[in-house]
Image (cartoon, rainbow, N blue to C red):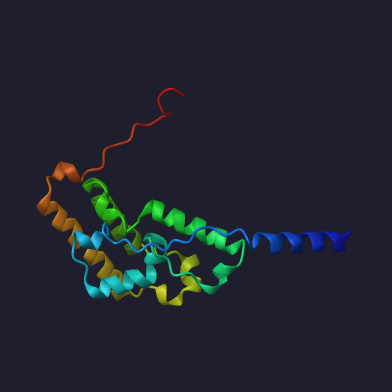
Length: 169
Protein backbone atom coordinates (compact mmCIF):
# COMPACT_ATOMS: atom_id res chain seq x y z
CA UNK A 1 0.00 0.00 0.00
CA UNK A 2 2.76 2.45 0.96
CA UNK A 3 4.63 1.53 -2.20
CA UNK A 4 1.60 2.47 -4.35
CA UNK A 5 1.29 5.79 -2.54
CA UNK A 6 4.98 6.56 -3.09
CA UNK A 7 4.73 5.64 -6.78
CA UNK A 8 1.65 7.85 -7.10
CA UNK A 9 3.45 10.77 -5.43
CA UNK A 10 6.47 10.30 -7.67
CA UNK A 11 4.20 10.28 -10.73
CA UNK A 12 2.52 13.51 -9.60
CA UNK A 13 5.92 15.16 -8.95
CA UNK A 14 7.08 14.21 -12.45
CA UNK A 15 3.88 15.43 -14.12
CA UNK A 16 3.86 18.82 -12.37
CA UNK A 17 7.37 19.52 -13.67
CA UNK A 18 5.76 20.22 -17.05
CA UNK A 19 3.33 22.84 -15.69
CA UNK A 20 5.33 26.05 -15.42
CA UNK A 21 4.28 29.56 -14.46
CA UNK A 22 5.15 32.50 -16.71
CA UNK A 23 8.44 34.17 -15.85
CA UNK A 24 8.66 37.80 -14.80
CA UNK A 25 11.23 38.99 -17.31
CA UNK A 26 10.18 42.18 -19.04
CA UNK A 27 12.57 44.77 -20.43
CA UNK A 28 10.22 47.77 -20.65
CA UNK A 29 11.61 50.40 -18.30
CA UNK A 30 9.68 53.35 -19.79
CA UNK A 31 7.59 53.74 -16.61
CA UNK A 32 10.38 53.01 -14.12
CA UNK A 33 10.47 55.47 -11.23
CA UNK A 34 13.99 56.52 -12.24
CA UNK A 35 12.57 58.01 -15.47
CA UNK A 36 10.93 60.73 -13.34
CA UNK A 37 13.34 61.05 -10.43
CA UNK A 38 17.11 60.62 -10.49
CA UNK A 39 18.46 57.49 -8.88
CA UNK A 40 22.14 57.38 -7.93
CA UNK A 41 24.10 54.44 -9.33
CA UNK A 42 24.78 53.02 -5.87
CA UNK A 43 21.05 52.98 -5.11
CA UNK A 44 20.39 51.30 -8.49
CA UNK A 45 22.88 48.58 -7.53
CA UNK A 46 21.34 48.09 -4.10
CA UNK A 47 17.82 47.86 -5.51
CA UNK A 48 19.00 45.43 -8.21
CA UNK A 49 20.43 43.09 -5.56
CA UNK A 50 17.86 43.43 -2.80
CA UNK A 51 14.56 44.59 -4.30
CA UNK A 52 14.13 44.17 -8.04
CA UNK A 53 13.52 40.41 -8.06
CA UNK A 54 10.14 40.95 -6.38
CA UNK A 55 9.49 44.64 -7.03
CA UNK A 56 10.17 45.09 -10.76
CA UNK A 57 9.29 43.50 -14.08
CA UNK A 58 12.60 41.64 -14.27
CA UNK A 59 13.33 38.81 -11.86
CA UNK A 60 16.66 36.96 -11.65
CA UNK A 61 15.60 33.38 -11.02
CA UNK A 62 17.68 31.01 -8.89
CA UNK A 63 18.54 27.52 -10.14
CA UNK A 64 15.89 25.92 -7.94
CA UNK A 65 13.18 27.76 -9.86
CA UNK A 66 13.39 24.88 -12.33
CA UNK A 67 11.54 22.58 -9.94
CA UNK A 68 7.85 22.44 -9.10
CA UNK A 69 6.18 23.35 -6.83
CA UNK A 70 8.98 25.80 -5.95
CA UNK A 71 8.53 27.75 -9.20
CA UNK A 72 4.82 28.22 -8.41
CA UNK A 73 5.68 29.48 -4.93
CA UNK A 74 8.27 31.92 -6.34
CA UNK A 75 5.86 33.14 -9.03
CA UNK A 76 3.23 33.82 -6.38
CA UNK A 77 5.80 35.59 -4.20
CA UNK A 78 6.89 37.84 -7.09
CA UNK A 79 3.27 38.56 -8.04
CA UNK A 80 2.50 39.61 -4.46
CA UNK A 81 5.64 41.75 -4.26
CA UNK A 82 4.75 43.56 -7.49
CA UNK A 83 1.20 44.08 -6.24
CA UNK A 84 2.61 46.03 -3.29
CA UNK A 85 5.31 47.92 -5.21
CA UNK A 86 6.56 47.71 -8.78
CA UNK A 87 9.43 50.10 -9.49
CA UNK A 88 9.16 49.29 -13.23
CA UNK A 89 5.65 50.74 -13.46
CA UNK A 90 5.52 53.29 -10.65
CA UNK A 91 6.09 56.32 -12.91
CA UNK A 92 2.86 55.45 -14.74
CA UNK A 93 0.77 55.56 -11.57
CA UNK A 94 -1.02 58.50 -9.91
CA UNK A 95 1.18 61.04 -8.18
CA UNK A 96 -0.43 60.34 -4.80
CA UNK A 97 0.31 56.63 -5.16
CA UNK A 98 3.93 57.31 -6.15
CA UNK A 99 4.34 59.47 -3.06
CA UNK A 100 2.67 56.88 -0.83
CA UNK A 101 4.90 54.10 -2.16
CA UNK A 102 8.01 56.18 -1.42
CA UNK A 103 6.70 56.65 2.13
CA UNK A 104 6.32 52.88 2.38
CA UNK A 105 9.86 52.33 1.06
CA UNK A 106 11.20 54.60 3.80
CA UNK A 107 9.12 52.85 6.48
CA UNK A 108 9.77 49.25 5.41
CA UNK A 109 13.51 49.69 4.87
CA UNK A 110 13.96 51.74 8.05
CA UNK A 111 12.13 49.13 10.15
CA UNK A 112 14.08 46.26 8.54
CA UNK A 113 10.94 44.66 7.11
CA UNK A 114 12.42 44.71 3.61
CA UNK A 115 13.96 42.74 2.13
CA UNK A 116 12.11 39.82 3.62
CA UNK A 117 14.06 37.42 5.81
CA UNK A 118 12.87 34.51 3.66
CA UNK A 119 14.49 36.22 0.66
CA UNK A 120 17.79 37.04 2.33
CA UNK A 121 18.16 33.44 3.51
CA UNK A 122 18.75 32.33 -0.06
CA UNK A 123 20.12 35.64 -1.38
CA UNK A 124 22.90 36.61 0.99
CA UNK A 125 23.89 39.57 -1.20
CA UNK A 126 20.44 41.08 -0.57
CA UNK A 127 21.10 41.63 3.14
CA UNK A 128 21.27 45.38 3.57
CA UNK A 129 23.93 47.04 5.65
CA UNK A 130 23.06 50.09 7.72
CA UNK A 131 24.77 52.27 5.10
CA UNK A 132 22.75 50.68 2.27
CA UNK A 133 19.52 51.18 4.20
CA UNK A 134 20.42 54.84 4.72
CA UNK A 135 21.10 55.29 0.99
CA UNK A 136 17.74 53.80 -0.02
CA UNK A 137 15.92 55.89 2.57
CA UNK A 138 17.74 59.07 1.52
CA UNK A 139 16.88 58.41 -2.13
CA UNK A 140 13.19 57.73 -1.39
CA UNK A 141 13.07 60.84 0.80
CA UNK A 142 14.66 62.90 -2.00
CA UNK A 143 11.95 61.64 -4.38
CA UNK A 144 9.30 62.69 -1.87
CA UNK A 145 10.94 66.11 -1.44
CA UNK A 146 11.05 66.61 -5.22
CA UNK A 147 7.38 65.69 -5.43
CA UNK A 148 6.52 68.20 -2.68
CA UNK A 149 8.28 70.92 -4.67
CA UNK A 150 6.64 69.97 -7.96
CA UNK A 151 3.05 69.17 -7.01
CA UNK A 152 0.38 70.75 -4.81
CA UNK A 153 0.19 69.17 -1.35
CA UNK A 154 -3.36 67.85 -1.85
CA UNK A 155 -2.26 65.88 -4.94
CA UNK A 156 0.16 63.85 -2.79
CA UNK A 157 -2.51 62.56 -0.42
CA UNK A 158 -4.10 59.20 -1.09
CA UNK A 159 -7.92 59.43 -1.07
CA UNK A 160 -9.51 57.46 1.74
CA UNK A 161 -11.33 54.32 0.79
CA UNK A 162 -14.86 53.95 2.08
CA UNK A 163 -15.17 51.37 4.84
CA UNK A 164 -17.64 48.52 4.85
CA UNK A 165 -18.80 46.21 2.10
CA UNK A 166 -18.90 47.41 -1.50
CA UNK A 167 -22.20 48.93 -2.66
CA UNK A 168 -24.76 46.41 -3.84
CA UNK A 169 -23.67 43.60 -1.51
